[in-house]
Image (cartoon, rainbow, N blue to C red; front, side, top):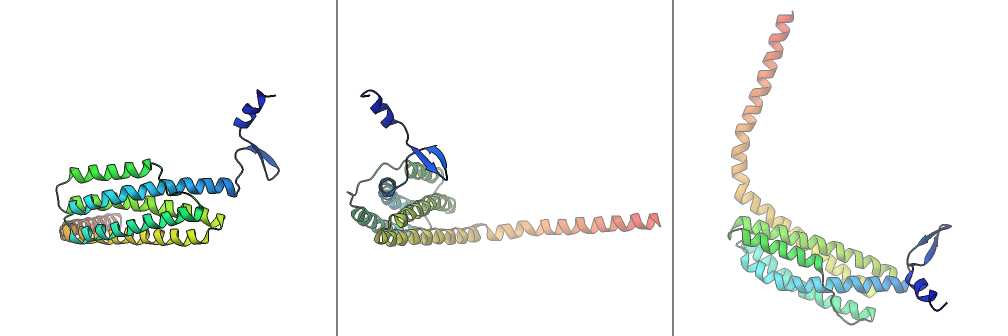
Length: 221
């Protein structure tokens, strides 16, 4: 029996779900809280990485509106780090990060894209593309841990996480607006000039097809 006990402990527990038995770890308040803490540790490290990356990106940007937005978001991110520390306290845990490989990969990818472009509109668009990937990662992450907090009944944590999620959504929308302005100012007129000959060609083709059908009908009659 002494030999069998460790083996039994290592095996997944059997759970009854709608009369059917399956293997796995049962979801309860304790296991859900463990998942919650793991997620906020991951996000805590992600936010710390972002605070180190944003000043470099702001410096690399040519567009002043973009640079200002990045500096503004740096201040927001520092506040978001502070909120996560409050969430740790609410959960009764020490504020400690867990290496976030996902964020590390996104920031490295964004940094490479910036290095590949000279300072100017194309680099600014590359910065925005990289930043929006980061924002979408954060929006998803905050939405997930907020939902877990709801199931744990952690009202104060829910409010803090919702504030940050809202800020990330606003930051993403602001980046979209800046990108739209860049596309319009840099490529808008050129696209209009290019579309005009295409429209003329399309009209000519339609008229030619119509004339051909008319001739065919006359011959048939």
